Image (cartoon, rainbow, N blue to C red):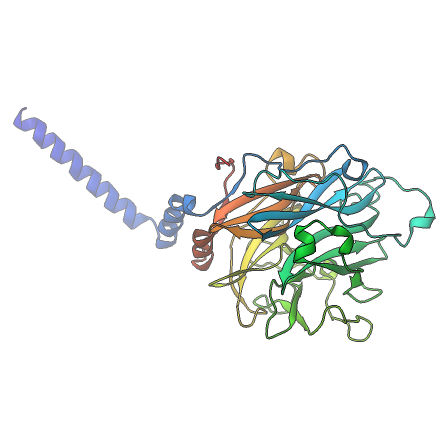
Amino acid sequence: MSFLFFVNILALLFSFFVIGALLGAAFSKPFRKKLLGRLQEYRFLLTRSVRNPILMPGATPWTAEAVLNPAAIVLGGRTHLVYRAIGMDGVSRLGYASSGEGFIFDDRPPYPVYVVQNPRNSKGGVRRYSPVLYPSGGSWGGCEDPRMVAIDGQIYVTYNAFDGWDFIRVAFTSISEEDFLAKRFSRWSAPKLLSPEGERHKNWVLFPEKINGKFAILHNLHTTDPNHVCVEYIDDLAAYDPKRNPIKSADPAATPPRAIAWHHRMRSAGPPPVKTEYGWLVLYHATSENEGHRYKLGAMLLDLQDPTKVRARAQAPILAPDEHYENNGKPGIVYACGAVVRDDTLFVYYGGADKVVCVATSPLKTFLDALLEEDSPSLSPQAARIS
């Protein structure tokens, strides 16, 4: 090789060095940080399963219109879902399914496991499924959008008791873990209402353990301070009477919009909080200013000792309704009611388009690291997971 060849190679390398230095000087530090964040994005993707939807409407009349918005819990080595189903009669009931690994739900009884008897307006004549008249998922009555926790050997399920637009309240029922695992679903406790009479409330969630010896209810994300949420503490859920000591909670629908992080309006809490070493992980539903019709999922961390305090918040949505199964029904809806951790992986169970049940996952530690670093945990547009 000639001397001239080596000179040309050295000149080329020097040119690359100069160009790199100039580019590094030209780009601002925030730009470089953002670029580095994009390159590292695959560390903490919240990824849809290739098996989505994992549950679809069934052949039975009570599941014929939709299955959606599942509660989730891990017990006995299996993931258990209690999902909302809408029947041909327009009533919402709760169904059950379980899985050994969190993706394939091979145990799904053909009957509902919880039914609210005698809806208040049931004597007003036969009603039928109508997403236009009843956009609350399409049902005109029953139990909607369950959330589930296990505390001291007892399973608690909170849900929205919907019986017309003048009757939207939060209720709960409970069953022992032993009866739940044995599928003795006739042993649910009688339903009890938590929210006050004459007020419109939905989507209150229980923390999965007592805090300072009391049941803790996350009942509102809206405060005058965006760094706080509303938590109520109750000694005994079974004995609680909302008439004597009502929980004071603002109606999110009546709360003025406010720009926080990526969203313009917070809608509601999603699954019950997930306890982590860094704090309570809370996923929530919100809409952005220019896309008020699209429900997206946000994430924040609450302080372990004082869960009214927000420690960190994702600056971008972690889940958005971009797939066909999240739009083929009521367009633009992802709605999560269940989240569990298995083998250090976060599983988020959600309803797509008010029609089907789906799941997305992320390694928990990298997700939390990204959240604490004020990066934006994000969702892969492709289903990159093999499971």
